[in-house]
Length: 153
Image 1: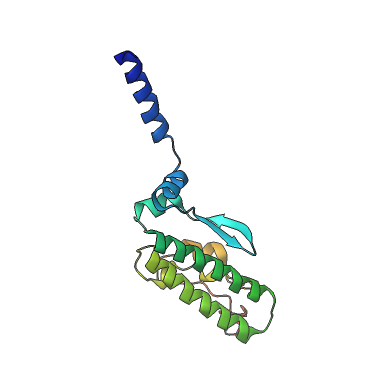
Image 2: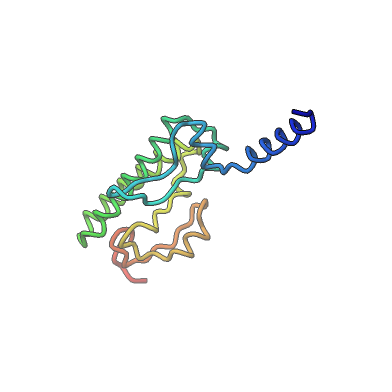
């Protein structure tokens, strides 16, 4: 084999390596994919680029997948009830899970970055609260069975 052939082969192997997806890199590095399962079905995948950027280890990745699956279980429970006390209790569990997620992602534990307004049965405005994410301000629907106080303004 000529040195030109070796060069071309090495060039294409390097290019192929660069074209691997972040998901492939996570699987190769940690021996585990980023897919979260719920009810024995794939629900979604965690952000593989963020897994690499935050330099998560396999135990953190597994914990995150487990936490996401647990959060989905609470979402199911919330879908199955209209009892405001149960909804509030389940939402509180989701809040705890989101703190644990932040810890495993190596982020500061900051409630202002939680998606509290995306839990099932929450009637608080989604876009308004998305715009305020990371701030101390929230827009609460007073009639929300989870976050509201039932009082009209």
